[in-house]
Length: 171
Image 1: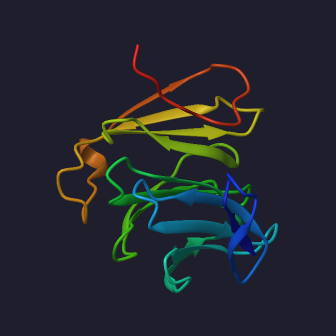
Image 2 (image 1 turned 90 degrees about the horizontal axis):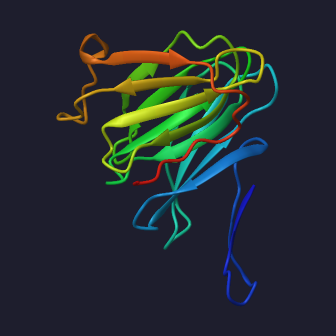
């Protein structure tokens, strides 16, 4: 399950019952939705989207072949990225409103440990497990949020040491 807490009072606001152990959570930028990633080791995982005002379960996103280990919304809230564990090794990009798949990014050499969109939403970074080059950066023109053309994406890889999370900042 996922629990939503009030940070000022410490009071429990809502408990959201997922179908498996929750491994990752992410708030939409406007705070109206919560995404939870779940699954058991070696079994297919899923992403659940929740309406935080009502507690209603919105679309459940399936396709990962192992547990969902990380989640991130794009800055405008239109896209959601999810990362898969050891047997899956994919990043999936979803339309956060409809739940429809936008892209499946393959080629990771290990479990995906973190995903993060850049502040402008044009770049998606993924961090993988410690024994492989941990950062894949994909730059794409997200002009049509229902389509993602990998042929238009530039891919770069580098060795930056062990990463568990990824974040961006303006310099």
